[in-house]
Image 1 (cartoon, helix red, strand yellow):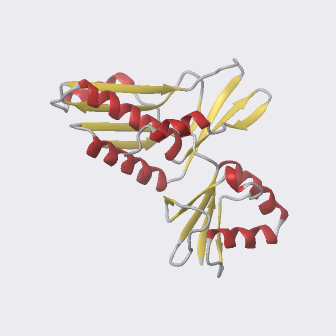
Image 2: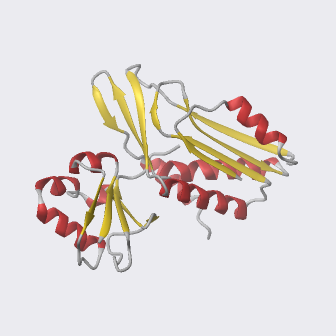
Length: 82
Length: 148
């Protein structure tokens, strides 16, 4: 089981802040493909990966990173702090 | 070193005084970010964050600043939740024996907070609400801190 978190407009497009998923996806990119195949709202959220960032267990990562051993995946737009 | 991610307003004067009184530094630099209302139409600013990762990311940035420059102390306060125009969003303070280190470290902290701390701003106006887009210039600003 893996916790998947969504923030900002990603959360709004998907319609929920987090969900717990059963997945065998080996990489972040494969997990995204699984989600996009599920429902249109995921397709809308993941349409342009260049406008998205991913964190694995609260560390910034990339879409080709492996998911083995990861407990928490978060998707969000580029950060706008400060 | 102190970090606070909070919804409550903070008192800039009180925070600066407390920071200054606790240090033996020769130089203190503070920066404060205020909610801007560029077009006069902003009703509020919603700031979302990633509890856990936000603290973790900022702590790492502060730790990095302390190893790069000779700092005696550093402070970051960043708010989240619903803010209105004119309210302070965040502040950074750095203390160092000399001003060059204090200025550089404060700029470094600001550049990294802008693009690497997980916060997302949404501007809420009379005509609706929009997520603030990240600026390429903010991303470019990080490159000047690359270690060669």
